[in-house]
Image 1 (cartoon, rainbow, N blue to C red):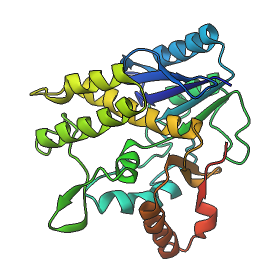
Image 2 (image 1 turned 90 degrees about the vertical axis):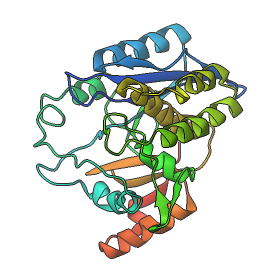
Image 3 (image 1 turned 90 degrees about the horizontal axis):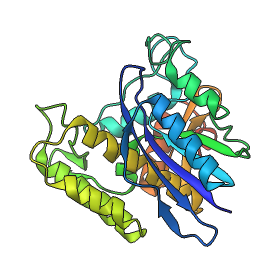
Image 4 (image 1 turned 135 degrees about the horizontal axis):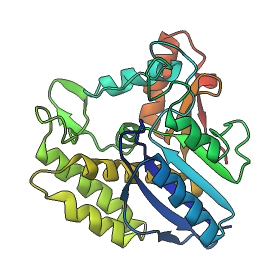
Length: 277
């Protein structure tokens, strides 16, 4: 069965641009990249996916999107963010709260809902039986799960790479080079030479731009889709009703998240589980 794999670093609002990258996994397991990552808003992403589905006649589509896909709370954090945020902040990272009070992002008229509805809505993690599956992911968790953490004398757990070029006060060029190198190696090892070469082409930019980071994050999203399609370990954090995040499996992460569930009086077996497709 051939499967279309998509990584979408979402635009979040109608006025913004995100980035998209696609790949097909053939019946024999061979991966075939569908060009290089490109800048895309919601409409462009939708049209690209529909075109790929029609032209390639794939039996299944797996979309990993870097934006919450289930948001029921009017204020504050979702429960999944309450669990994950501690793991991220421990490594000097941050996590934006998702709630319907964030106009343009998660209110009734936000473009994310139209995009999701076009493909059947967020995946039901208890069945995963549709032609097109859409999962929320978070690139930072992919970085942590793969161990792409930098040492820090103040934090035994290390720190996340500071690779957002918009944040000029914290952006670290060496971290950008480091993360691009790690990501390029993975795509090269998976047989996606063109994507690996593109990542290397932006690796040593003196001043990366936000669209460069967006395309890099789309590749991080795609990694999760690739692992899901190949039956490798991926896990679901959260639950269907209030929202969940899918990421690569990691014993270290699972241990920390389990402790966080216990601290917040949640049953870890209900909030952290393996993804079965």
